[in-house]
Image (tube, rainbow, N blue to C red; front, side):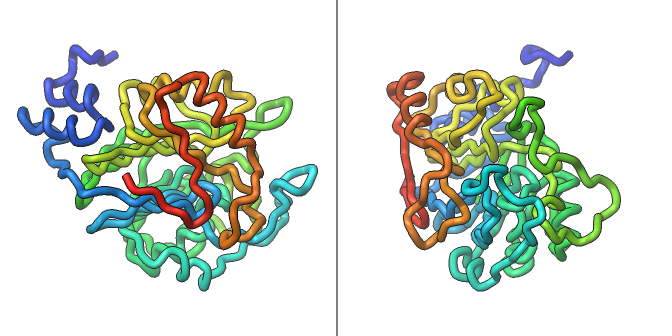
Length: 315
């Protein structure tokens, strides 16, 4: 096993500083190394597009996580059994064009419909680089995503983009039911499958988390209420995204806060009933108030932010 003492000084320095923003960049730049290539930015505008869809905008770049805005109804929060697996996939190109005018990088956390269904069209229209697992990319290839723009990742990657870095971490999806099953679980490795037609065809396909560092501010995003604690040890983001849930994940909120160094900000994500319109205020699907209270109890110095549909926050 490789220990921290066995790594090069540059790598040890990056692990101590990664995700801490401008101070980390300045310190690393003194001795060179991976973080020295990062540049500080004037600021980042964060905008919520419902569900787990987030837009990060600087003067020079737009990064998207799980950009799904078509919001066709599935009964996810209104039906006793949850989302109807036979629901047909819809891609509302006019809605995507209205709310997502541009993208440079698209980050996919997992393969469920409410995370990737809009990505193939959006990638083709914007020319963005798309990061995801082999399964995510195969599902999107089956939906006519441009193959040349698809970047396969599995966790452990650190990529330099123009004005920001993206670090990828392995993760797991939250589970439901007595037997702790992942909704629409499974993978689609190797051959590209037939075109997905129903939401059950968009399988989870492995989960990822991402640290996006713009120099002055960094963001750590999980696509569901679960994470791999040992994978993210040592990261210190400015902003941690958390969502309600995690009933089968012991102390999900408290452990996530501790693992990320009790960050200055927590932003509530994936709490709305996404059968409801994006152009109206979010209707509560998950209990964000309970999430807020748990954050306050575990990390009193952390500011809890609730951003509504299409609203922005400047960092």
